[in-house]
Image 1 (cartoon, rainbow, N blue to C red):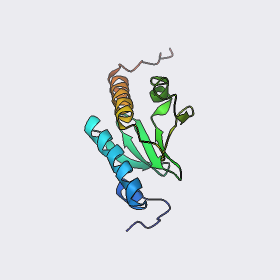
Image 2 (spheres, helix red, strand yellow; image 1 turned 180 degrees about the vertical axis):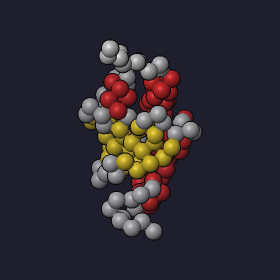
Image 3 (tube, helix red, strand yellow; image 1 turned 90 degrees about the vertical axis):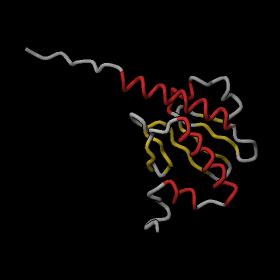
Image 4 (spheres, one colour; image 1 turned 90 degrees about the horizontal axis):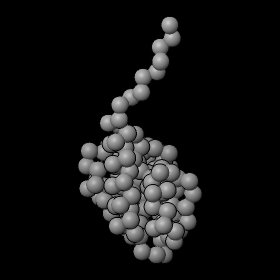
Length: 132
């Protein structure tokens, strides 16, 4: 049992707090991320379900009127045209609960972020100049 229901320690605990229709959306988003990034690990960060792959990959969460999706600023900038119908900020997208959730778009964003994080991890680390 979660010792602090307001601060769940695992994604399962987080999802379990919601009504069935919201749980189904959250589980589907989780399944999409797992399918696209099977080697990503799950965590709770900022009180949100988070996937980590060479750094934070994406966060997501349920709110009163929307699903929040947090793919980092680059994940929003790369899809600015497709995200135009949704309220967004520098690092967040809001998918209203009274509209169909764009699971295909979420999958595209996760694939982009997965590639981005893998490339970043594979890039040679720049060496800092040593002082003489």
